Image (tube, rainbow, N blue to C red; front, side, top):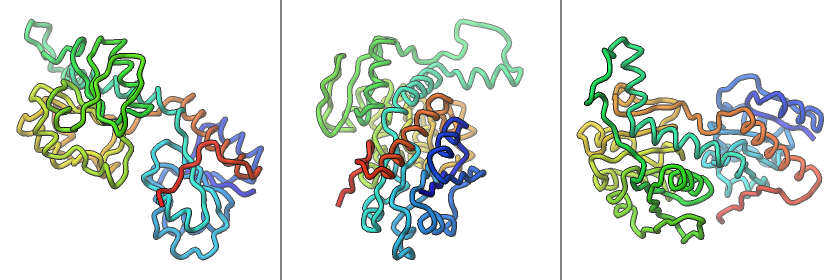
Length: 320
């Protein structure tokens, strides 16, 4: 079975793939081009794509009978793959849930602390030679212990963030979710996103990306937030209306933001990069070696199951 891995991977993942399959690994980190996507669908039995490799409906249009029957996505988010179009073309799609949960939640906590305590701003000040010694009113931020966190999307990652906030910092947890959750810590489900935004000190976006969540965090939600509150996004960039976020930060509607993802990634607007009250990370949610190896192995588990004609461990069901 021929397998295409679209980006360089940790060596342990590559070694396993090479031993098990006739594997080709692209040696660049750029997204697949249109021609490369056509080749992936016509010359390989399975493909391990990742963020940026857009397999939308158009990708399948000119491939009447694709050889490829599996897109084993490297990552839990799959908004770059049209699962329904893939099914119509005869392909299954899988992802890597679970492997990314704790690492992404850890980055969420990193951004909460960095934004609330102005850590990025402080480091920039020091590195620029602008720090002239401690004083009582220096860089006063938000002390998060005992405050209230709002979780937008109480799935695996949202629950992991909430768990850290509650047990680690004694924070009160409120959330919006499609269904109520049974949790091992106190958490209040809120019916309306605007009501949640108005009632928390930190709002953390953990909801999956898709048409129904595009610009879910819009000007109205941002206006509902407290002027002392912080917004953190560890999900996907287009869940937040980036222009509305910039306006809210410029006018002081919110105190700050911690972002790991961006609406037009990897482009980050210059105005956003210049704001001192914003913490910016380069999509580092799962950037730990053991996590990336686990993700790669989970993707390969799906490829192996497909090759053995077994049910995929992490099949993404189509919506239609």
